[in-house]
Length: 478
Image 1 (cartoon, helix red, strand yellow):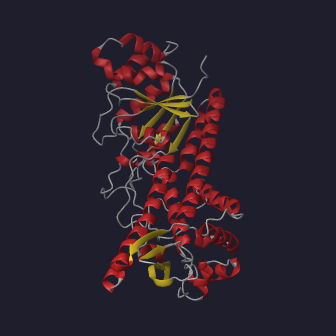
Image 2 (cartoon, rainbow, N blue to C red):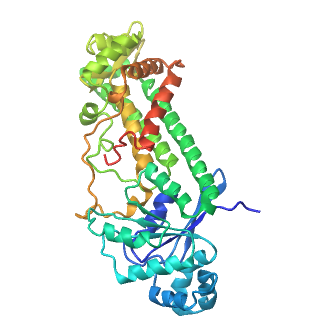
Image 3 (cartoon, rainbow, N blue to C red):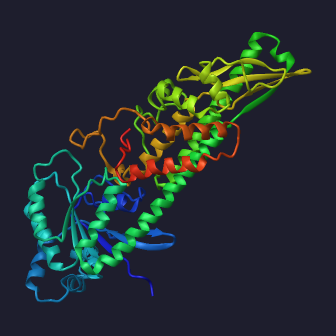
């Protein structure tokens, strides 16, 4: 026999945002959400499956079509033990009530109720009718004030009306809800009926354990990105005849430079795809001015993220790593190619981050050939910039509501985005954590297994946990 799980019918009149609520609570941005009223015409079941097991079901229902008629029938049969079930059985084959039967069927089968209302709009008599008929069902029920705008003048009216008929009333913006807000809403479900507490508690525990696992996976993806990017090299062998003249040398340098830069970008994009999939995002839009939309190697990103010059100097001296990064830091990026092959010459530098070269271009001469090699990254600031980008991306994925796809981003009355200065997370870490990261980066450049990786893993987990619990600003509007 299958374990009993919480089943919740998401109800409300057309265009109240029911589908957006379901999309956000189930982390399913593939749910069809249409901004036109009344597009949901049948009940669709969206289970949340964790480790192959259903832990909770949300049912997206059509909007009310004949609420007055349903209420009149309920009031006329108030002594009937189960009004929802009796109504469905009475009108199941009546085409006039087809939408209403689709709406009430889950309730007739024992589902709890989540009523979604648009708190930005004036409460009408029709709303009061819907509230009363749902009260008469006797089912465990919660009401959600899904206010998607900055209009709040009617919110108190809604709270007063809903609190008389529902076990719990919550504000919940389905376009903006964070992980923490989703979990608070699920926790509130325990209060709608004492008999539901064990079921809801089990579902919440499954959510929390799954989220912890996904957070660990995101941390692993970030660490893998750092190890791959910081040890990344590109080599190109060319015949000596092609580099006799400066124009030939410049062409080879440009080609290998582009390949190296594109390789770093590709590694970041691959990591981002893993992170996005990990947090179940298929619809993903970034504003063009976002620090996450800018080129990884751009000046804007280099200035916005990473450590300050003072922090970088302190970390570099304290880490004391005998690496190209330490040498570059001490010589302001003008070392003479400490990583060059014997017999090689410094052919130039690649890119600039924070005023220092990103990586060196070394040339090894052999009979009839030249071997050009770029990498690994020697710039001491770049690893912190790359890390900040990866954490910012993860933070956005963790707290970007799956129902946001339905938001009208051009609506002047919508809840405005917060003004956030583009800034990463590493600058706010204490100096000990920054030094641990610097030591890990130094080992990663050399392709060495680092004894500092475990400490770095905990640093990143603490940041992402803080983001999840809203203890740290996720900058998800960036």
